Amino acid sequence: MLRVIFTTDDLVRTTVAPSADPLWEVVLGGCRLRDRDRPSAFHEWALEVRATLDSRSPAVRVLHLLAPAPDLLTPPEAADGLEEGLAALRATPGSRVRAELRRFGPMPEWMKPLCNGDRRALGVLADMIRQLHSRLVAPYSEVIRESVNADRARRARDLVDGGVHGLLAGLGPYARWQPPVLEVDHPQDRELLLRGRGLRLVPSYFGRGRPCTLDDPAAPPVLVYPLEDTDRWRGAETRSLDALLGPTRSAVLECARTGAGTTELARRVGTSPASVSRHTGVLRAAGLLRTSRYGTQTVHSLTVLGESLLAGRQR
Image (tube, rainbow, N blue to C red):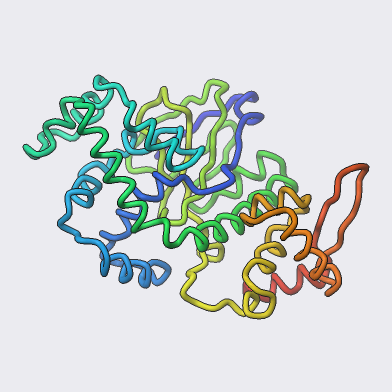
């Protein structure tokens, strides 16, 4: 079990990431490819990926070797995007690379340059991760984004209803909030002292079973948690609400659950404010959305009919 220990400052600094982390998704996507009891949510994805990815390729072999302890592959800079994460990976000091890889025990001979912290080998590793991202993650970016948006709306409701305590209590069933400790299902017994740094909660489409965190206690604290099945959209299926409203309008409606301005909705949905304005106008005319103005702020929220429509989709 992982015991995450909070102070008052940590509660104030706890945040939910606005999107999945691209490098964590590569690592966890690789884990899903190896699942023997692959759930239906990943079945079609795995079939498609296996048709285009050689399981004997060096990139896949490296991922399988390093995924059990992914600190090296998941620098915190990836929170700003794939390119930022890969740049940080290339710039990893050789001493840290050697320290990270010593934990794995003996490595194959072809991994020796990387184990020695060779700069060119780090560049090759970053190129491999980019290749894996293009096969495992990038083709499914829309499904991942919509799924994370649904989860983010869920977390926002928990935060509005119960504050940070409600947010942390809503992380079950794989975590239990017993202030000031968050107990998280984990293969090792360890403690993570936040010491005023806060905790970054990162939703993961390819996460499964229990959350993940970094082994290095000095790294920025992060908890990568799996989406709930009700929030993970398979993408291969045509959802009835999408068929009725269109996928973008459906996503706008979903993301307006907790109330949001036009710019915030555009960021959550991944489109432009002008596009969101058009969609909110249609949804408002249909009686699914209401728009209120508070000074210079415009806030879109669901009507009772809009809430009922979304609730009916999830049954």
